[in-house]
Length: 355
Image (cartoon, rainbow, N blue to C red):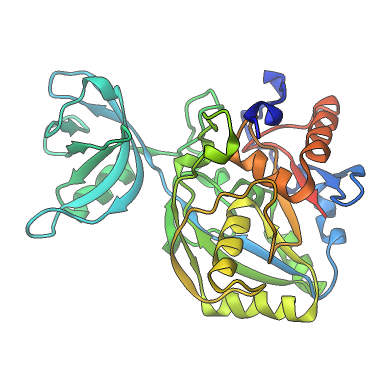
């Protein structure tokens, strides 16, 4: 299928550059995937869309300040390091902390080069080797230096379509209220979760909705456009995910009851459907590992019934995923409606609930 079928025009002024002052004041488009009917609502009304016994699944990953913008070469040139994920250490004594990272300006940098931070030259990291896909393996000398550089020089890893410098407030607003600080590792927020407040979650529990939390550390590949003509030739980047035994029990209980399983975001959807396929059932088991499921039209969903999601970029694997759930024509018609109604798009934007 040609990738051009997943294109649409978005006026740039609809790309949200800042979050709303209050999370739950986002607008919410309600899309019936069977009939294609569309309704305009507010996220504050989300509780009314679920029934007692339904199960809501959240991604509790924690975004860390992955963008290191104050690096410099010994020659004086500025360097930005974007941390992606930790990788196994290759040092002899195991003290070095190795990461997969992106670097700018990548073409000028050399293997073995030090990138300095701060006023002196004692705070640094080392470029170990350039990887085949253009990313870098980098190394911090110790876990202490890793922690110091990230905490002192890291900033919120805002996506490229937010065309402003990160502010201190982004470290809290580009983060869900249910993010687990012990599960730090995402370089992008699971944005469908940004609309929730503690009050909304409490209202859902009081209504009898069960809530399960799983983890997927969102990587920069979430923003990667599909760069092939035929969507079948695209590959998604693997990301680390985990489902606890407790979460699996909560999810499986809802499936046994025959109640609705609602995924909050595409990250939750891909994780649940990936793990369900390991046993080829409509249940999930305790899991920890890499997830690389690419969901496209023709995919048969085994776990997810409904999806809360933000609006996604043209020609993206996330738009393709949503289209696999609700149908390409229906989804693109909903996007046209949202544009006409001046919905706010992308990470800090409004949301859509696919019933």
